[in-house]
Amino acid sequence: MAEARETGGGNRDGRPARRERTAPRKITAARLENMALYYLGRFSSSSGNLRRVLMRKVARAAAAHGDDPDDGAKLIEELIARYLSSGLIDDRAYAAQKAASLQRRGASRFGIRGKLRQKGVEGELVAEAIETLDAASETSELASACALARRRRLGPYRPAAARRAAHDKDLATLARAGFRLDVARRVLKAADVEALEILARGEDES
Image 1 (tube, rainbow, N blue to C red):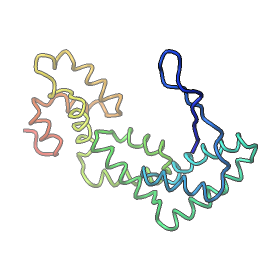
Image 2 (cartoon, helix red, strand yellow):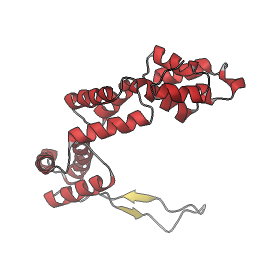
Image 3 (spheres, helix red, strand yellow):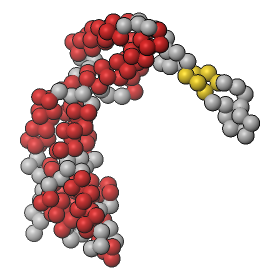
């Protein structure tokens, strides 16, 4: 972890003193493990994401001390291999849980794929996580769009007087999130909030 120190008692205008980052400590296997466990204690992570987090720290420390970052990279690979073997990191479980969480928040399949890749999940596991979502419900993509409408107060959630004027804006919001236009239109076509909730549950809209 980078350390910080204050440059003085305070500025003349009364603002707090600026804090400068001091050089990070040299990377050792023990220090690297402490950083990894601290991170995993705060966040769930894939092996790819943890690798990126740790490599940023290794790169800073190597630059500060003139060390070879490849030495730190080797330590990281050994650490991640051990965590994968012990089950402390489980990329398949992480991908499934993250995908389900994103779906509940209203993410499209496109958005879920992008987020999982961003988090360092391998393509095969991304595809598997999406297949699991699809197998759970044929209407899950539509349900995700309904969830986004609920969270962003789109379509039926808008006051009746403002709904027509906001239609194109709401359609664009759903499209930017990665939903197909036919899905977005079905969501915005819902007569009211009750009809949208019925749609989200995959029940008969009639």
